[in-house]
Length: 393
Image (tube, rainbow, N blue to C red; front, side, top):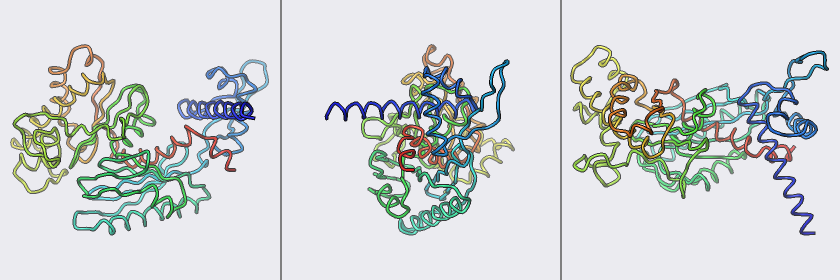
């Protein structure tokens, strides 16, 4: 009996792997015929056809136009189903809450946001976030789509395996069990992660056409974190707390940090550092961008100095991880393009020649990477284990 169970478990593992491989290949390539899937993935045509039949029944893929090659029988092309379900992405930070609905192909369909702020209590912010998530669920189901789950990106230390926000310094929250609370409230799977990690996942999966194997997404705002994709996979570390790049020590005589230490990278690069260096109480990033456009000498000198410090930290990351790509995003995105040349120059000077040889440093082209990537947590959970969804039907 035990051997029979083991055999069934092995068959289920192979089925899960094959389903996942087909979905990911269709996500990458767009449309393919069954014969192409079998050839690319080293399956027999019969195996590929059986797996595709299950995915068609689960409405995760659809058949599209015929393709004729030579004199043989034309074959139907396959692609991911845009109506295969919808994922909800949410992000909560110190100034706003934003929620998006994303279809199974990764296309954003709906968005709504609300203001947050340090003057609001935790319960008030959570209430606003939960209202937006409920609105998203109502909209998606009203369109006749099935909900696949909720992804949440948060700035702070996140125990993603257990779905707990361990500590969010900008919000002042500790030990919030989002996976349990929202799972019970909304009755769908809930996934949470640090917002830099969600940004890295979304960018790597849907925006990076070069498909870098080793990528860091630096989310720079009130704080700073690095979402890491190493060897093509998200890297979380031993307890899920990897990527706290803002607390790398960059100066021995640096400014005090909110973490209790001093000389952290985030004390030199980010909105609080920019406010301190320019002598204002709070930064208006759009006004700062305008001052840069008008070549205000004080603002330009300050931002150039910050760009150098940004490059110094990136050089450390390049040396450590031999990265292909570094993507810059977050609340500082409107002025990051101004910093690129100085940042790249510093990396060229300070990183080792071989690790830096092919690294690309760029600014993200969108301002919703974190929330979009949170929705991608849900899509990836289906891509990695579609058997759960297929068996539930």
